[in-house]
Length: 115
Image 1 (cartoon, rainbow, N blue to C red):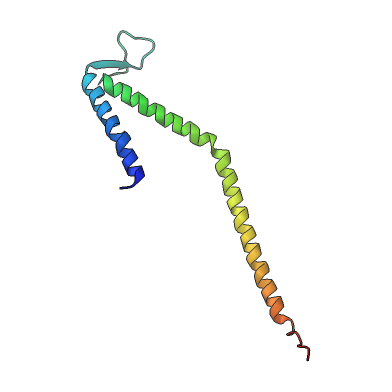
Image 2 (tube, rainbow, N blue to C red):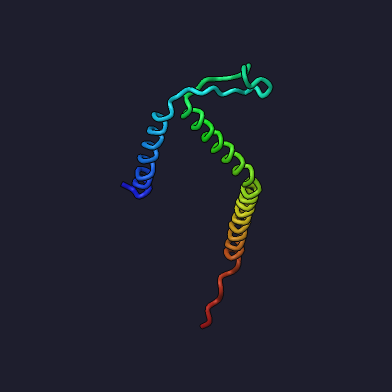
């Protein structure tokens, strides 16, 4: 068993237990309304268990945070892409120079030995 798998179990199992206990303790239904102009009788509303509202809100927050983080790192990904292409170009140039030097050495006459 790898350490990563052990750590995932060590954290994941208690976290799953807490989420299940939270869901069982907060099963009462709540009305979630999306109509700011008529809070008493909202046109757009849904009735969900309280734990679902909280967990969905948490998931949306994680998703929005991930998208924000990903978009802020765009300049670093672009720079890494540019540098990878530059490294590739330089490696190709180096190989071409090595081939050229090898061909030039082969074209030179062999050195004369002193008697």
